[in-house]
Length: 144
Image 1 (tube, helix red, strand yellow):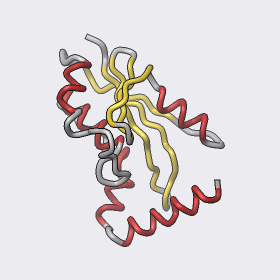
Image 2 (cartoon, one colour):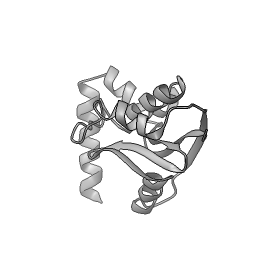
Image 3 (cartoon, helix red, strand yellow):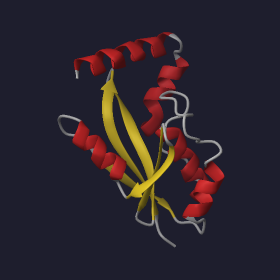
Protein backbone atom coordinates (compact mmCIF):
# COMPACT_ATOMS: atom_id res chain seq x y z
CA UNK A 1 0.00 0.00 0.00
CA UNK A 2 1.67 3.26 -1.07
CA UNK A 3 1.96 6.06 1.47
CA UNK A 4 -0.32 9.02 1.00
CA UNK A 5 1.18 12.49 1.41
CA UNK A 6 0.02 16.08 1.37
CA UNK A 7 2.20 18.65 -0.37
CA UNK A 8 1.71 22.33 0.49
CA UNK A 9 3.41 25.35 -1.06
CA UNK A 10 3.04 28.82 0.42
CA UNK A 11 1.98 31.13 -2.42
CA UNK A 12 1.51 34.48 -0.72
CA UNK A 13 0.72 36.10 2.60
CA UNK A 14 -2.12 38.51 3.41
CA UNK A 15 -1.75 40.43 6.66
CA UNK A 16 0.75 37.85 7.85
CA UNK A 17 -1.52 34.87 7.11
CA UNK A 18 -0.07 32.54 4.47
CA UNK A 19 -2.08 31.21 1.54
CA UNK A 20 -1.21 27.70 0.38
CA UNK A 21 -1.61 25.52 -2.67
CA UNK A 22 -2.09 21.91 -1.59
CA UNK A 23 -2.30 18.56 -3.31
CA UNK A 24 -2.28 14.84 -2.54
CA UNK A 25 0.58 12.53 -3.54
CA UNK A 26 -0.37 8.87 -3.99
CA UNK A 27 2.02 6.27 -5.37
CA UNK A 28 4.26 8.79 -7.12
CA UNK A 29 1.35 10.71 -8.68
CA UNK A 30 0.02 14.10 -7.66
CA UNK A 31 -3.69 14.89 -7.55
CA UNK A 32 -4.82 18.49 -7.34
CA UNK A 33 -7.81 20.60 -8.26
CA UNK A 34 -7.91 23.67 -10.49
CA UNK A 35 -10.15 25.15 -13.18
CA UNK A 36 -9.74 21.97 -15.24
CA UNK A 37 -11.13 19.79 -12.44
CA UNK A 38 -9.09 17.03 -10.81
CA UNK A 39 -5.66 16.85 -12.39
CA UNK A 40 -3.21 13.93 -12.14
CA UNK A 41 0.47 14.60 -12.85
CA UNK A 42 3.88 13.36 -11.69
CA UNK A 43 4.45 13.99 -7.97
CA UNK A 44 4.91 17.67 -7.02
CA UNK A 45 4.20 18.91 -10.56
CA UNK A 46 1.87 21.76 -9.59
CA UNK A 47 4.24 22.90 -6.83
CA UNK A 48 7.27 22.95 -9.11
CA UNK A 49 5.41 24.82 -11.85
CA UNK A 50 4.18 27.39 -9.31
CA UNK A 51 7.78 27.93 -8.22
CA UNK A 52 8.89 28.39 -11.82
CA UNK A 53 6.24 31.09 -12.42
CA UNK A 54 6.95 33.07 -9.26
CA UNK A 55 9.87 35.35 -8.66
CA UNK A 56 11.58 34.67 -5.37
CA UNK A 57 11.68 31.67 -3.06
CA UNK A 58 8.69 29.52 -2.18
CA UNK A 59 8.61 26.98 0.60
CA UNK A 60 7.02 23.55 0.21
CA UNK A 61 6.04 21.18 3.01
CA UNK A 62 5.33 17.49 2.57
CA UNK A 63 3.34 15.69 5.27
CA UNK A 64 2.54 12.01 5.54
CA UNK A 65 -1.17 11.43 5.95
CA UNK A 66 -1.22 7.67 6.40
CA UNK A 67 -2.03 4.59 4.40
CA UNK A 68 -5.19 3.12 2.94
CA UNK A 69 -6.32 0.34 0.66
CA UNK A 70 -8.30 2.81 -1.50
CA UNK A 71 -7.02 3.00 -5.06
CA UNK A 72 -6.18 6.10 -7.06
CA UNK A 73 -9.01 5.18 -9.44
CA UNK A 74 -11.48 5.08 -6.53
CA UNK A 75 -10.29 8.51 -5.39
CA UNK A 76 -11.00 10.03 -8.80
CA UNK A 77 -14.29 8.16 -9.24
CA UNK A 78 -15.67 9.31 -5.90
CA UNK A 79 -14.48 12.93 -5.95
CA UNK A 80 -14.88 13.87 -9.63
CA UNK A 81 -18.63 14.67 -9.32
CA UNK A 82 -17.82 17.25 -6.63
CA UNK A 83 -14.72 18.71 -8.31
CA UNK A 84 -15.73 19.01 -11.96
CA UNK A 85 -14.00 21.18 -14.53
CA UNK A 86 -15.21 24.76 -14.30
CA UNK A 87 -16.34 24.49 -10.66
CA UNK A 88 -13.16 25.95 -9.09
CA UNK A 89 -13.64 29.00 -6.87
CA UNK A 90 -10.69 30.63 -5.12
CA UNK A 91 -12.63 30.95 -1.84
CA UNK A 92 -15.39 28.36 -1.82
CA UNK A 93 -14.00 25.34 -3.70
CA UNK A 94 -10.26 25.40 -4.30
CA UNK A 95 -7.23 23.11 -4.16
CA UNK A 96 -7.36 23.04 -0.36
CA UNK A 97 -11.01 21.97 -0.40
CA UNK A 98 -10.09 19.12 -2.74
CA UNK A 99 -7.06 18.08 -0.66
CA UNK A 100 -9.19 18.03 2.48
CA UNK A 101 -11.81 15.82 0.78
CA UNK A 102 -9.11 13.53 -0.67
CA UNK A 103 -7.43 13.15 2.73
CA UNK A 104 -10.75 12.27 4.32
CA UNK A 105 -11.67 9.82 1.56
CA UNK A 106 -8.29 8.07 1.63
CA UNK A 107 -7.44 8.01 5.33
CA UNK A 108 -10.29 9.52 7.37
CA UNK A 109 -8.06 12.45 8.36
CA UNK A 110 -8.52 16.12 7.51
CA UNK A 111 -6.18 18.66 5.96
CA UNK A 112 -4.35 20.63 8.63
CA UNK A 113 -6.23 23.85 9.41
CA UNK A 114 -3.17 26.02 8.84
CA UNK A 115 -3.25 25.27 5.11
CA UNK A 116 -6.72 26.81 4.63
CA UNK A 117 -6.69 29.45 7.37
CA UNK A 118 -6.60 32.41 4.96
CA UNK A 119 -9.65 31.51 2.89
CA UNK A 120 -11.64 30.49 5.97
CA UNK A 121 -10.81 33.80 7.61
CA UNK A 122 -11.75 35.70 4.47
CA UNK A 123 -15.06 33.86 4.19
CA UNK A 124 -15.92 34.57 7.82
CA UNK A 125 -15.55 38.30 7.13
CA UNK A 126 -17.36 38.19 3.77
CA UNK A 127 -18.38 40.19 1.73
CA UNK A 128 -15.94 42.96 2.69
CA UNK A 129 -12.89 40.69 2.82
CA UNK A 130 -13.60 39.02 -0.54
CA UNK A 131 -13.93 42.40 -2.23
CA UNK A 132 -10.70 43.55 -0.61
CA UNK A 133 -8.78 40.44 -1.61
CA UNK A 134 -10.15 40.49 -5.16
CA UNK A 135 -8.92 44.09 -5.45
CA UNK A 136 -5.49 43.08 -4.14
CA UNK A 137 -5.28 40.14 -6.55
CA UNK A 138 -6.26 42.29 -9.54
CA UNK A 139 -3.72 44.93 -8.57
CA UNK A 140 -0.98 42.33 -8.14
CA UNK A 141 -1.75 40.66 -11.47
CA UNK A 142 -1.85 44.00 -13.30
CA UNK A 143 1.58 44.87 -11.91
CA UNK A 144 3.10 41.55 -13.07
